[in-house]
Image (tube, rainbow, N blue to C red; front, side, top):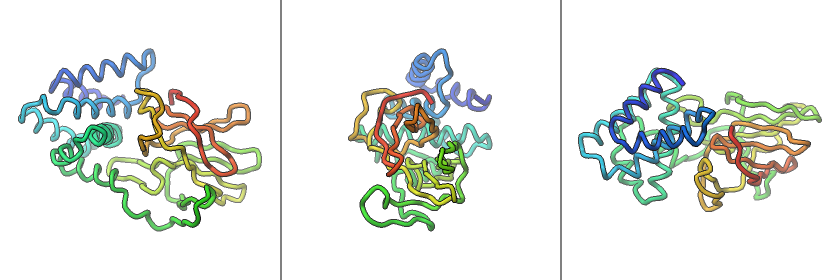
Amino acid sequence: MHVATIAYLDALTRLSPAFGTARAETVAYWAPDAPPTTILFAEQGEAIVDNLSQLDQEDRDALFAMIDEGMNSADEELSTAVATGFVEGAIGRADRSGHLDELLAALGPAAHAHAKAWIGGGAPPAGTSQSGDDPLSKPITTPTSYDVIFRLMLGDGGQLIAFDSFPRAGVLHQAISGREVFRFDAGGRALWQITPEEGTTEARTHPFDPAIKTDEPFVNIWDAHGDIYTSRMNGDTFLIDMETGSASYSGWART
């Protein structure tokens, strides 16, 4: 973790003991490993919503100014962690607890813009084709402009690729967000874009709940004795049907 990221967390902790508690609990949970930076920041985002009413106006102003400073940081690790962890974690908690409007009203310009993009989505960008209702006809986004974060070669000469839906702060590829995994044939033609079962454990904070929607990114793919699995950044793991691209929740694993 970068020095700037650690200093940012330290400054946040000084605003409220609740943030220090959330940080300590996350570190303890992942021990002896270090927690993924995005998950650590997501826990801080949730703590903000849970404790917002306990902050006086001065601390609230300082907090939301800090969030925008993090979003605009020249340190890419920090700006990405604030956007994909902090802001998105806070938005998810606020939405579930009925405080979304209050949180959106309090966010600074940079965080508010990211939150609205993440919530609203909007029309898919050019390069998206769609037809039918079966899994093979789900929208497949032409992925030529996305960065590759993981690649698994297949025995038939094809490959599975996980693309980066959030490469840096302020850039969100909404068309692949939460569906980053694609299968390509040996000629490079996209056969399907993953269609995961809806639901999440939210980093194993509760049993898998199919009622909670998520766009948490897929970041890993592996072959386990012929079965192909993929996992989200929060550890939720799915078994992929290699014919259709449908994926069913199979458990939790650290990513």
